[in-house]
Image 1 (cartoon, rainbow, N blue to C red):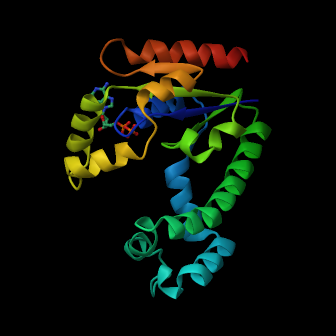
Image 2 (image 1 turned 30 degrees about the vertical axis):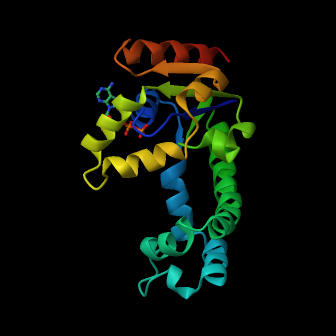
Image 3 (image 1 turned 180 degrees about the vertical axis):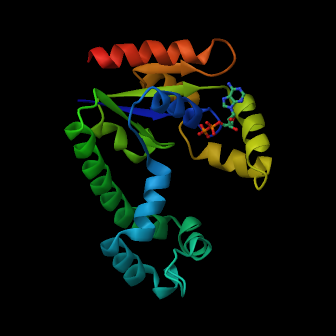
Length: 198
Ligand code: ADP
């Protein structure tokens, strides 16, 4: 079974494109939301995070305390590396379990959607990668429209931590152009047909 990654810079439209594949019946693993789920529900990881960062990682109701975690880990490279070293293996396990279920269900291929497929190294476990492309100014405008809580400096900071579009274009086996230069749906249908053939 083919395992295809789908990535793209913030605002490129990778979630929208992934949803088009999902509408065609393709199983899509959304890495961001699965990672959040695993951090909230995986008992092994919960214990590890509390041991590493203190009991305040979860609030009185047992919910993940995101602002606390952001405060202790997101602005400190060492702490962030510690957090990732705990979270990544558990999310990897979750992806493996999910993949096995898709294989058992007989799907012809699956997609793994992630903003940082190359940056995290996750691309290595996949057969090929689709990059969704849009230029930075288009992405900025989309994100400012989508996310009321983000200022342009926040978006710039996120973009600064992601590989450039040029590098992703060079590395990806497939590209979906979502920059208004081409219709998106025909590109998705062509890729879907190719992946179904294997
Ligand atoms: P990503 O997951 O890559 O950050 P999204 O898929 O959430 O990006 O798309 C960013 C925003 O831009 C969303 O609000 C989405 O609806 C919008 N968007 C995506 N593609 C287009 C397009 N071709 N034209 C107009 N808006 C788009």
